[in-house]
Amino acid sequence: MLSRPSRCCILSLAEKVREKLRSFRDPATGLSIVESQAMLIVKEVDEGVIQIEFIPSSPYNPMAYSYAMALKAISSKVEGVKKVVVFCKNHVMAERINEEVNR
Image (cartoon, rainbow, N blue to C red; front, side):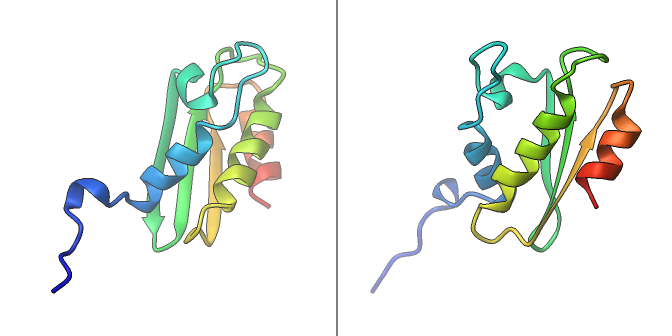
């Protein structure tokens, strides 16, 4: 009889996405975006739908749009992800970034 893996070994889709995002390095710091962002929330809001919220290191960070696009692109490659919605917060261009990234 095969035993089922324990809960500790089964990652949720949001956890899988977060792990995948560790591969993205912030060019300014050399750290993974997961480690360098003070605020990065990854959650599954519906089956296969991932929502990512992040706050750039500065409200004027010129890389915020690039980060948002990279977060979406990397997350979209995770098996089981059907759609990714990214929200940049506390940035002077947040509204525009969010509109562009989530078209």
